[in-house]
Amino acid sequence: MKFLKSVIAEMKIVTWPSKKKLTKDVITVIQSTILFAVFFAFVDFGLGKLLNLFLN
Image (cartoon, rainbow, N blue to C red; front, side, top):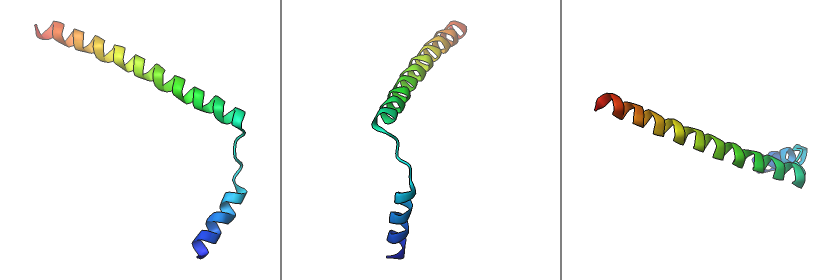
């Protein structure tokens, strides 16, 4: 029971982001994820082609 009271007390201290800030942060995370996925796909494709060139 003491644990739950501590959790509730801590949750009251937390500063929650506004809806606008949260939306902006979520969009940033999604854009970054897509950007990194495209980057790594190109790197993977390029290294695969380069490796095939050397092995053949």
